[in-house]
Amino acid sequence: MERLIIQVECYSNYKYAQKPIAFTLQGKKYEIRRILKQWREAARDFFVVETPEQRQYTISYAEESDSWRLEKIKE
Image (cartoon, rainbow, N blue to C red; front, top):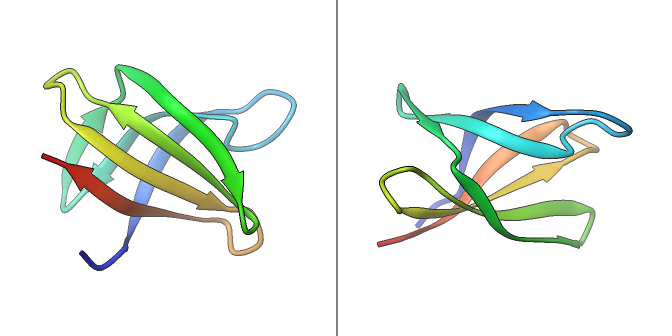
């Protein structure tokens, strides 16, 4: 799967993009029910998130380019 640039709504407190709460993919908005895992790697913050439909997505944020990407969809 090619990594796609996506729009993400996030909670920001002491740092920007601290916690994603929703994302838009191909014109459809997906609410994030919970964050299953998060880590930092190669200057990107990664999040494995679950939607209310119980689908899992791996998304990442790069502070340098201020961009979010969809990394993986778990079917």
